[in-house]
Length: 93
Image (tube, rainbow, N blue to C red):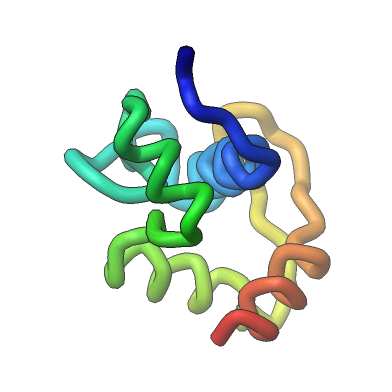
């Protein structure tokens, strides 16, 4: 049986938000933006030990500090209000 905890859903949401900011090709071999998570990753999530890479975190912070506080999603031609994400990142930083 696969270990699950409520934090896994939070990490899944953060992963998808990461795609909105970092792009569809933002997968890395390990960490929050890993393409596919295994049991070991999920256990680490339940212990809050899975993160964006330093580069990814810096890009997200830069985006959240933007004066417009909006990202234009080129492919979907929508605007995403990132103010709620900015607040979360600033509290964590």
